[in-house]
Image (cartoon, rainbow, N blue to C red):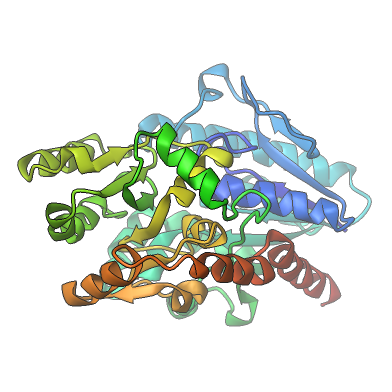
Length: 396
């Protein structure tokens, strides 16, 4: 049974920016291959693709769409449509030439929607369809998300019932999909995101000190946040929580990294820092490429603050923990790993977290966290869960 991991067309694989779904596709493919499975990535053509030893086939699109794209505007949507149409034609050819049934593992609603619309039901019988729902939106309360689902995720609602297995990242998403779509509950499977524990790992005290020094942060106590800069990720909320501590302790620094999705929101963060006189304690590290640089950022920190208002299963949380960094999250975030995070709802709860992890640092936590993640959340473990589900599909 050959597995095709299907890139979304957002940005090329291997991911050169923090594009979570592309990282998932890349790491699953690498793990499947290491397990001896016949696996191949189908991805958008790219002008400059990072070197990779993974089996990868490109889907050609006009050159204007091959540039790195991190925006979410009209061109982004058009790119998704153009790629999805070309992808459907590529998958149709694969089915025509295949002598055995294959698994098409989709990760994006556009891709699956156009595959269903443009490939006949007869041809589709030669493939099992797996779909992983990565969207944060399904994590919310139905009364709050129903309108957004109908306007922006109608392709997903339409397409998921055609899948032989739908993977979801948390119970709230599973319950919403089961209750409010035509997806058979028996086809819904909870899945985790994983982490490359060879990349994200604790560094020695000497290495951490060197990284702090290179970034002119010697002697500073770092709180880090990683994620796209936008209202949902709530960097401004993080800064408001930290304000009393930044005012009282000049050696505490808030460092954040991620692509700027909303320029106005980034300006609000800068304005808040300026108005409160904490500019020197707020550092933006830009969009960091997955890998060593990001691991260095995690290792500079004593705590990762993650006050996002909606998530599926954030890769940055499991990356930070793999690097040995405790993570503080809103109590509203519920997913498998959330009980291993430090949850807060009120300011006094957050104060306790700061007292425990920033003002009174305990280095022994690092190895315990990292060891737990390595045993439980490696991509090998996650890939095995996917593979078990794929084999169950084939066995029915």
